[in-house]
Structures are given as structure tokens and as C-alpha cells.
Image (cartoon, rainbow, N blue to C red):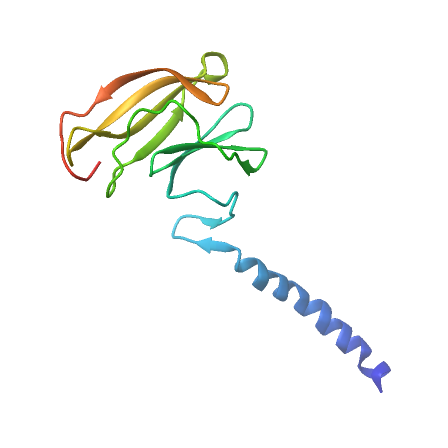
Amino acid sequence: MFRRFKPVFLFLVIATTPLAIAAQDSEDFMRSAWHDYRIVTVVEGLVNPWAMAFLPNGDMLVTERPGRLRIVRDGKLLESPVEGLPDIYVRGQGGLLDVVAHPEFGSNRILYISYSKPQGGSESTTSIIRARFENDTLHDVEEIFEADSQGRGHY
């Protein structure tokens, strides 16, 4: 009796396999009005990751809003944060914000970093620094912009 239904059974298995695969794949993808995308966890252990910059050597720099700049190297989060950041105001929306590598980073090692700069008490403003990034440390840190406003939020 099985011989009689074997072709039908095989047809059903072959016909439904792509449907099962598509259903499984659709769980990995998110859909929006403009694009489909997939969420993939790259590393664990970051606290409020805010921005990232990719370096020519494959490293990824990630800012954590609580005031740390972290390095992801070869798919692993390095234990120690980057040293050399200025004092950062960490409250509410404030903290370490964006990081951008200079277009010629490969030759000049320059990063631009925005953050909430303390202004005394509970006041702060947005500031941008330029720094040279060598041996996983910031050097020659220089403030190049400070917003002409102080407040307790909305950076």
C-alpha cells in the first residue's frame, strides 16, 4: 500500500519543504515599508550602545552612552574600554554619543567623538572632540566644538 502512495508522499515532501524553509527564514527578517532587514547580535556585554564606526583594520568602535568607547576586534568585545576620553555628563539622554573616523583615518588615525559635556551641577552641553587613536588609546584630545546652550536634556 505504501508503494502506491510513495510518489504522492514524496511529492508532498518536496513541495512543502520550500514553504517550511521560507517560514523559518521569515522569522529572521524584519520588514518595513522601505526595506527588509535582519537583526543579528554581533557581541554581548555592551551597555546602551549608541553609535559605531568601522576602522580600516576591521575593528569596530562602539560608544556606550554611560561614557565608554569600546572596541570589537575579530568579533569579540575587548574587556577594557578605550582610555583618554574627557569627563562625560551621564544623565537622562546625556552621555557618550557619536564616533566617526576621519575619511583618511588609515593614515592620520583621527576620530571625532560627540558627547555631553558637564557644565557644573546638573547642566551640560554637547561637545565634539578630535583625537588621534593609537594603541587602543585616545591621544592629543582637542575640543573642536561646544554648543552654545546649556541644559538638562535633549542633546
